[in-house]
Image (cartoon, rainbow, N blue to C red; front, side, top):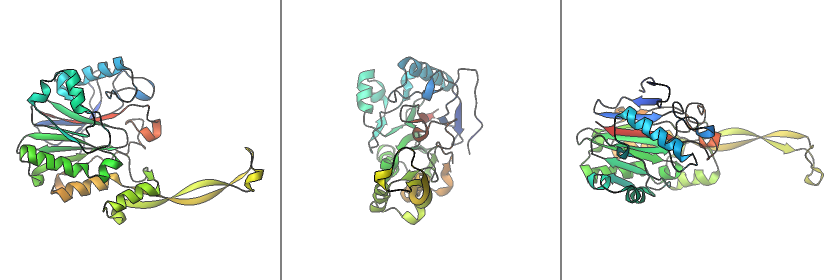
Length: 293
């Protein structure tokens, strides 16, 4: 499903590649191979998470060298957990940097049919989804956090590809990239209720897991920092975002056999992939992207 990771020299980004088609390059970045430091170590190309600009620029240059594309051909939006899909065409590519940034602000999915353009989304526990329409040689990268998943951004991205390129969903190939797993994605009742009220089959996507919490043994007026504690078992809801997005792909008409699921939990594997829940929001982001050859 995912090829072995490749690294040509010490400063090259280490990418996990997806075998979608010989006509595209599809990948998720790992934390290895860049020059960022601290919680951004080593490879981060997201400019909205607090990393140093010089490090971001150096990492972007290294990635573009590896992909053999111009830096202007690497397109990443400023995501806001919404459902806006932006088409990247020759007119967009002709814009200056400021205009491009304006066009990409508030966007959570980017699609293109322009060769040698790489479109990607940033995640650090959210779910990235890649789409490839081989018949029309068009691609899309989707950022599906829990809010975007509830709002069915994957289905909306497929609809946008249908309208722009004539995409037939049953001919699409898809990848669900690294993201937080069911076991690691504990949510409050309010999040569970968002999914339930949006029509998801909760028996298929949600489970309760026991959580140990400490409970003071004496009345509150006698508590202090030295109060002994006992353990109390509670149950918390967990949501399977991988399953949610696979269901959306299938509901839109994508053939199940054409859907790859990376199956990598970012929280459990935060040494290899960025996880905001594990590292905090002031940390790097995974880039999951697709480039037309």
